Image (cartoon, rainbow, N blue to C red):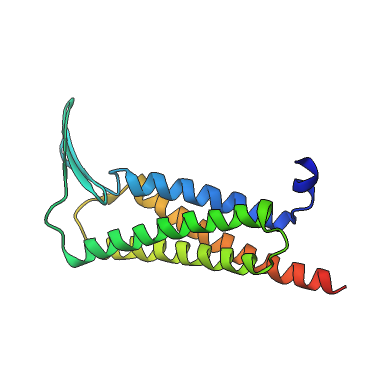
Length: 172
């Protein structure tokens, strides 16, 4: 096992770590209900996620699934779902490249493009959500999806550079 890890290019390991971190951040941001927070009064506040909205009064919290959504809200949900699928596919391709299909250079490109797609979809999703001009302040779930999206774009660039670097290295 140690011998097989030693043969993996460092850029692939780095890109995979960034991609895994971006996936984890995106999952947390995607699934939690703190995209937006609004203080109603001194003892109560409202927080909203992609799927649920919650009202907190003192010690009591009541959450409901969001039923009436406008087109922008649905578009934001769709983009974040696409980002999640692309992040998972990118991780599968990265693992395949590192441990199973080591000689398939095309997996660099596929993994890079999937990471770029995931990061782009995540960032477009948060931009669409922000464009709704909802009353309140963006909170940590919103920020985690932004950081995950930026990480996805960065990881995609690293994988494409790794493909180019390995191509030049093999040509020597």
